[in-house]
Amino acid sequence: MAARIIDGKAVAATVRRRVATEVEVFAEERGRPPALATVIVGDDPASEVYVGHKHRACEEVGIRSVHHGLGAATGEDELLGLVGELGRDEGVDGILVQLPVPEHIDPDRIVAAIDPAKDVDGLTPVNAGLLAHGMPGLVPCTPAGVMELLRHEGVDLEGAEAVVVGRSKLVGVPVSRLLLAANATVTVCHSRTRDLSGTCARADVLVAAVGVPRLLDGDAVKDGAVVIDVGVNRTDDGLVGDVDFEPAAQRAAAITPVPGGVGPMTVAMLLVNTVAAARARV
Ligand code: NAP
Image (cartoon, rainbow, N blue to C red):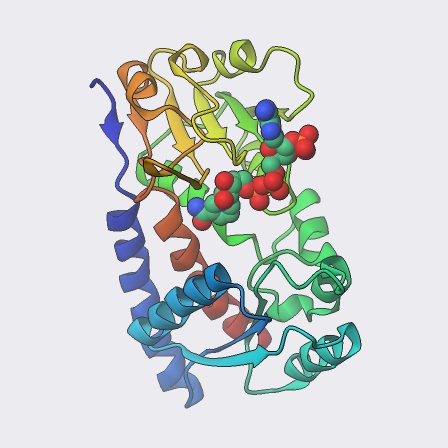
């Protein structure tokens, strides 16, 4: 295998250590640690696992976290009420409503109701708009994690050809905006893209955020490219990414593994955002 493996766990650990120091300084200055409120509606086991990880990570760096677990039958108005209350709560710096919410609730309405100053997932229309305008705001955690990995690897994005596969509000679009802000030449592919493999094969930096196991094979990877695989897909062979790792690693200069690549960065950047939100608010 030719490619260097990008160790997301190690980079995330470095970020978490930095956050722990920032939390200490904040707590000393303000007399309290930053605080994150999480909300889950229903009993989706994956959501429980993700939020559990987030609380443990908060605890590890000294961020106070409070969880609100609501029953699956909770109505939209009740959830909006809680989101509004958390927005007014002076002791809460970050609000995270874990998606998906049950079908009878409109996730866009809930996200839009989060106080943008406490929107540590960076998903509100206000923060998405700030990102689109190149203005400072809270950036979605996974795209922020992708950029941190590229920075850590010393990847020169200036004028580089970047191809992002996926155009979701959560990953594809924000990561493409961040790459553009870093002066890369950005192409965004999606399910209607005509020559997916050929387009990807132009990329100096290839970011896959699709949700289709091993969609991109070795032919989609240019020799010497940096490959960031955001995909997390459960298969009979265990967790795999959107990139077929072995053939891609034969051609790439550097590649993230799944698991152990982008995943750990998402939680680390949530901690970064919580401290940033706390600092900006007070
Ligand atoms: P999503 O909302 O389902 O979006 C998927 C995107 O992929 C869409 O834009 C879709 O195109 C595109 N797509 C689907 N099939 C395609 C195909 N055959 N060829 C080209 N494009 C195709 O997913 P997401 O929320 O962005 O998540 C993407 C992946 O990242 C998932 O595996 C998810 O589990 C993972 N993820 C990981 C983390 C982490 O922390 N590691 C965080 C978030 C997400 P259209 O727009 O045309 O439908």
